[in-house]
Every structure is written in structure tokens, then in C-alpha cells.
Image (cartoon, rainbow, N blue to C red; front, side):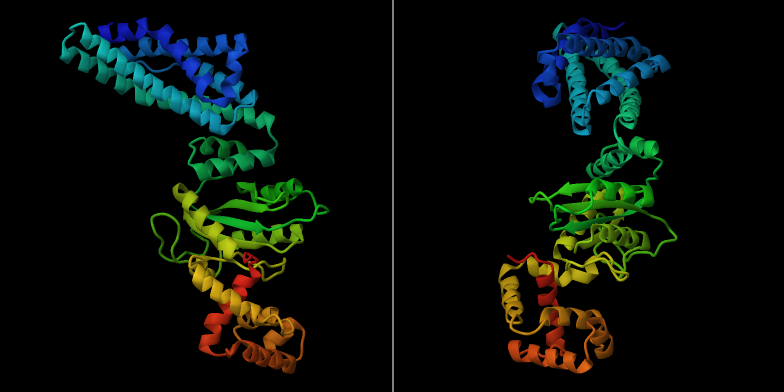
Length: 419
């Protein structure tokens, strides 16, 4: 064994203790190590074992054995069974990798400090790095599989689906193991849907039951993100898209910049199912992307949902895409324009149901008969309301100017984001 590896072996115990101390100091979920001597001893034993196996295997590029991987998996399983979160798991892996690389650098510096030839040191260092990357990946894979095994026994199916959704949005590699455990596929492209729920009365059905039904019916990663209010929040779903589904328009390298008029059918079905169970007005937005860019798609879908009008469940309900509300999105980013539109919307208040009337009018492409039928009023009543709109705002709702101004004012008003 060269002096580089001998130095790693000599420092193994001290480095293992330093790792345990770093866990207790930097990761809140490991705070128990300061009070639980047995847990601290077990953690130290594992850290020391990893370093000794590294020194034993890396000089000759030996692989971790099946017994080694089983032991690593058992550690991951025990930590998940103890309640460790996915975030803490990621921090543990990052911290461990960082410390191991630091130890390699320290061993290299110590080797040079005693006068060993630079050529020998570089050769041993290259052997170590050639071993470290692939075997480290195998170890992380085993640890994650053990972690997921415990989650399958500890958490209900719906909570596992929520963890999968959150891991995908964070780009956590454990998502592949979570998906396999849930029997869900991870395709190359997906649609991210955000359903905004501004408020739910206390008497509504249990939210967890509604989400569990959605997960089992649509077999998709779904999670609930609470809002500022105790009854408000967002339902976030990641729905697989297949080649047979309607294609999207050209997209950017992240989330899409141009979208079709209608969202893919699986997305619309999920939105309608949730809205029906919710029995409350909600607003849905969707964006498609590659699986690696779902975080960007989430940001866009969330912005769309916060701009889209609130709707009750119906056969026509569908999530909005960028092409539906691009004007309102831009307006929301320009406060002086948004304020002017707000004033236009306020001028409609004296009229009878003018906001609802204009909403129906534009959603039915200004067709008088279809609009009157949707509102359940006589066409002459519709004509009166349109005239009243012109009197109050000075804008003809049937003109190009009227469509541009009033449709945006109505959409912003119905989104209920004006305060």
C-alpha cells in the first residue's frame, strides 16, 4: 500500500469522528447524536467502516461486494425508518461526499509534506479518484434503495406519491427509486399542473382523501402545498406525457414558451376530478417540459394558475396554458397597467352581472345566442347588458379595443388576486 493510502488509513478514525460531529452540528435531524450515545456509536462505526473499505478496495480498484452494498442499504433503511426526511438524506450525502474529498486532499498534502515524490502521489490520487466516482455512485444507489424500502413500510401510498412529486421538483435522484416502488413511470416529458384553491370551508371533505383518490385514479405524483391561509393552497401534479398525446408547440430549454390552446387530456381529466371533489371554485394552470426541467415548468404553471380566473367544476373546465393568459401575466408584472385595468373593472360594478356577462360573452367567442344560453337569459337581456357596459366604460365590448381591454379586466377580476 502506498503512502497516500497509508495516510488515509492512519486518519480513518479521526476523520470518522469529524464526520459524526459535522452531522450533529450541521444537520438538525442528527441533533440526537449529542444525547444518544448508542446512536452516536453506531453512526461512528458506519463512518469508520466506510473509510476502511475505501482504503482496502481503492488501491486495486476493487468493487464494493454485495455484502457491502447490503450493509449500506441497511443503514439507509434504518435512517428512513427512524424518520429522516428526504432533505436530510440529501444533506447527509452531500456532506459525506464533501468530507471524503477533503480527506483525500489532506492525505495528498500530508504525503507531499514528508517529501514523497510528486509523481507517485499523483498516480495514487488518480487511482483513488478512478475508484471513488463509480463505487460512490453504487453506494449512494444502495443507500437510496434501502431508504425507499423503509418509506414503503412507514408511509401511506399517498404520502409516498407526494414525496415523489417533491423529489422530482427538486431534481433528487431518489425519485427513480420512489417511482419504481410506487409502480409509476418517469417519462422523458411531463405536464406540471397547479390547481390554486384560495379557500376551503371547514365543512369540506377531507383533503387527504380527495388527493388519495386522485393518486390512485391517475397514478401520478401529486402533492398539496399549503398557502398562507390555513384552508388555502395548491395541488401540484406531475402527469406523464406520451408520444400519442397532443404535441406541444416549440419550447425553450426549460418550460414551454408557447403552448397549444388545450391542455393534454390527462391533465384536464385530473383537474376536473379534483374540482368536482372540491366543490369550490379553483384556478388551474399547466406547463409542459422535460422531466429534468419540471422546476421551471412548476414556476410557469404556478404563475398561470395565479392569473387564471376561478371556476367551478364543469364539463368545460380545463387548466389554462400560457396562450390563454399571456396578456394577463404581462399585465400583472406592470403595476401601473394593472391598476388602470382594476379601475376599468370597478366601473362595471353598478351594472347587473356585467363581469359574469362579459366573461361568458368572450368565452363563447362573442356569439350572442350561445352566450345568452350559457347565461340562461334572453338575447335582448344580453344586448341590454352589453349596452350598459358601453355606457359605464365608454368601451364597446364588441370592438377590437373592447376585446383587448375588457377581456383582460374581467379575467383579472375573476382571478380574485386584486386586493
